[in-house]
Image (cartoon, rainbow, N blue to C red; front, side, top):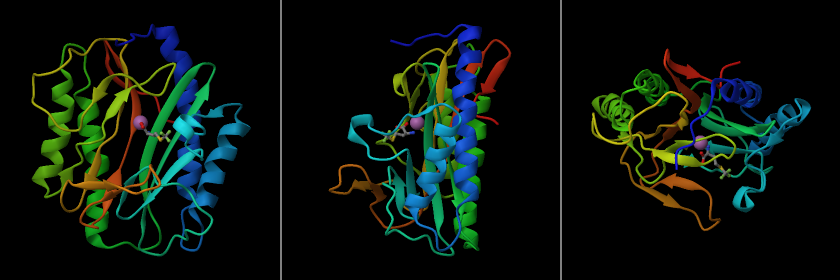
Length: 249
Ligand code: MF3
Ligand code: CO
């Protein structure tokens, strides 16, 4: 069931989203060679707590941290660890959610540690751009497939591939609401987009093949071929005036 939000509910949700966005920014600024992924997580977690919010991910299905830190060939759900040290040239995807006054904000971005290769840069740029192209299609009267197909075309035209097993999602009082928001699809198909829908759009884009595998820890998702992957996410609202990005500072 898709839960439509009133404009005052969306205003409330914006507060959670702003905290999530601030946590992501702070964590991203902490990315540099020599720091651990657990240190990045601590920055995100402290930011959320300092702003009176709760780290949405912590304890979610038993997840042990406030954020996911996914390096290089890790697509998503990398578990922060003190022994995992970021190196120059790494790309570091950080995903973080905050719950505040009963609403969830969810966002992610991929950051460079020191100098990265031109190919890694192109993957990150394309993934981020595809998110904004997808967001442009999040308009009332459109269809869910307009978003996914736009992201898919944008990335595939540039030689990259779209992960299929994980998708974006509705978001509101809980992190995962209907509908599921794939990063692939057919224009004009799928659920009709309506004012009041709040969704997280989150392309997970691979440098090589689309295949993934999950590690035995039950969380970490890596590319099957060991090539790089990038991930960007915003929580947005569909309004009669077009898409509103809620996870903006
Ligand atoms: N942004 C991710 C998602 O939409 C984060 C979930 S990680 C979890 O699913 F640990 F909280 F599950
Ligand atoms: Co999400």
